[in-house]
Length: 115
Image 1 (cartoon, rainbow, N blue to C red):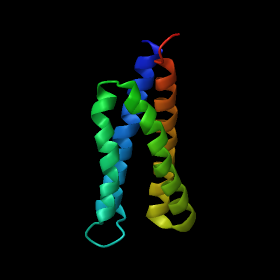
Image 2 (cartoon, rainbow, N blue to C red):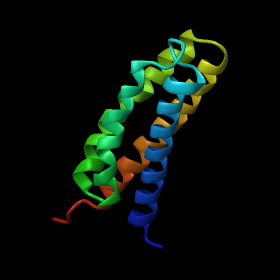
Image 3 (cartoon, helix red, strand yellow):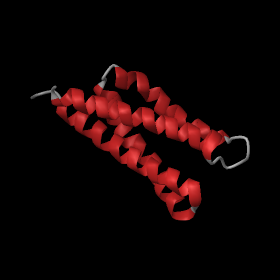
């Protein structure tokens, strides 16, 4: 197995897991309001990146490595300010965001054109 393939699979797995956690968090597990929250729409940029990840488009990996930092910041803020289930979910969001950042960044670097 070559390195770019492993990095792409790790990034895809992290992205899918982050999408699942984000939606489950804001709809069922710990929504801001009973019955779900419009905050679940924060998963849309992640879903938009999925086709590019599946096609292994380097540009998608590049911009996602920057966008995922927003999810990392949200996870840190909510881990700092919340308690209970919400804190645990934000710690999961932090871990998945860091994994996605690392995999996407290293994939973009491993697939850069040679000069």
